[in-house]
Length: 416
Ligand SMILES: [Zn+2]
Image 1: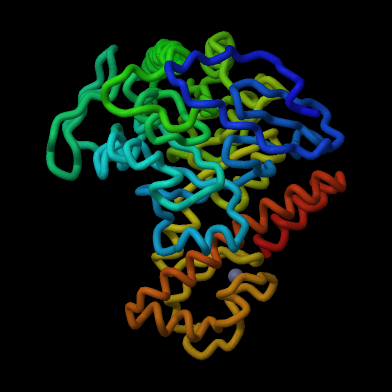
Image 2: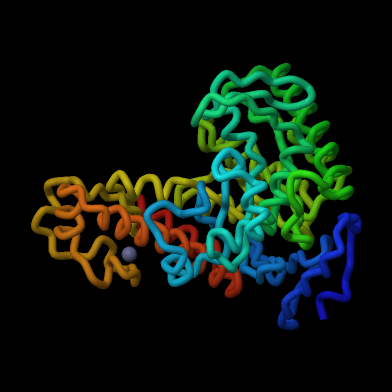
């Protein structure tokens, strides 16, 4: 069985008397590599096709297959959907934003109520970011110092300090299954000097995050709510190959349960993004998960799976749905367009989601133009189904070793 195998990663010492969450049973599949590190967390690589990888991640709240897409549930809610909807379309894991949750309703309150899973009524795996990205992009009057980032809340102007240690503590109280280290989010474009300094600071912060994670949350502001939580490091370095390589080496030397690639999908040319993903993913440990943060379009998912990525998140399918843009097997359509006013066809004839099996483009356009709330729900249901179905088709193709054929056909359909 998988749980007998241990490799890498340090044993955690949490100052808690809570019993370890038992690892869910994992069926004994013909895994190529099995790597169990943090208590309750494990990754098994089950097949490869070129650089594309089929795997499974186990967490204290169950497992999910990779490559996986994580819908973004910013405030503990994927906008416009019920958790029941997310379960029905097969979301295996969702993402929560630490910045928003720490400010409102607050991580101490969520910990008192049993942790984020219980608070939001979601029993499947969850990942939280560190809060850093929103601090850099959303907070007001932020100031970056070696100790961390000082900022004023965009809600009420209150002053806060997010240090690497605090980012770890907040996520421990939230009790996500995968926590992220605090990193510095570099603006694009950046000079080599700025990118190097930022990468080095992110590496120093990553070490502080890991030390805090291993030491456990101090008493005071609420307990850790998920003793089986895992922690991922983040590789930075902008678009500079030497910096990316150095960042991989520094981050791997610290040792995490998984590794993310940060600082991409921020406005750089697409071929440079793909080249950076390829270079970085190729240097990450083959027996641990790889997460590309903040990407992307359906084409990005396929192209980055082809370069060895296992996990994705992006607001694009949900945010664009609320603006009337639908992703389909034949490209994007905007339901506001007058040409759909009397179109009886479903949004995507190849899609089996609730929206596509019950409604026409004409109806979706009508409720959107009338400002009905259900328009945003129906559009979001479809877009997330399209993303999750794309991931399922990717996984099927890797298992059958037909991923490259799938990739060519996927891109051809959407460009014709
Ligand atoms: Zn659909």
